Length: 233
Image 1 (cartoon, rainbow, N blue to C red):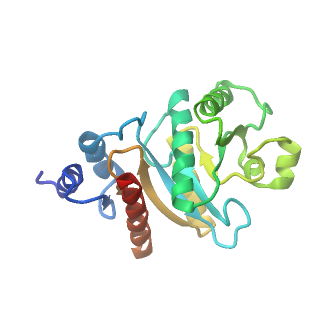
Image 2: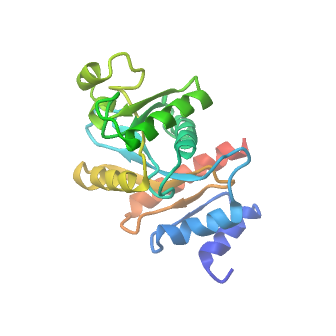
């Protein structure tokens, strides 16, 4: 308890605070480790994961330029079952935070069988499992990014898909791709990137990039408040 991140997370565990935001001067592991050790996963949650809310200026894609990227900060090599569960959780999180209908793209370097390998087969299997877990959510894959968000490309590569051309939730096959993608969007597209925000924990314990600015901190705090209010309900 002499480490103040551990102390803050224990305060959340005991109900003395509703949530925690950390990470401006800590690594992600220093923030997320005590969260997993102390508050653990929420009842009914298969696992905890981390995502970014990405808001791209002057963007016609997604939900008026807003996307959820998962996992971009926590689960390094998700299993098929992990990825399916994260997809379902991310859809619910997107609806809570963005107040729009989630359309979940299970991303790959292949679209609908354009390539075949163990990597694409894993994404296809995760997509099938996610649909079984949440048949009422629009989830589809495997999809390349252009097929996921560009209607003309979707019409060519994935006709009839309920997600292609209008995806707003991106599920990445591993932490490498998810983390790389969010930083590209942030630095090259000049997007606002809020996170890593956790989901699946018993209390909202959220991280910041050490490259964050004051607006990033305010955004993470606001998201944490929304998550805490939803948990109270």
